[in-house]
Image (cartoon, rainbow, N blue to C red; front, side):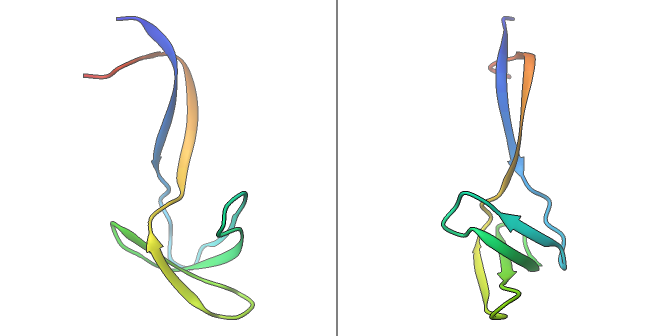
Length: 72
């Protein structure tokens, strides 16, 4: 099987109470994780204390050299 440079994405494993900063997004800014389910994440603004629930949208990415692609 040929080897390629492959970029991998997987959902970020949020933890309730975690302080996060989102950059380069319409949701940019500092947030506290209020709740997490398999499909949704609720974030609270530390300034206004408003809470928003969205489909999970943050992903941890990495690039691997010499990775098999596609996988079976």
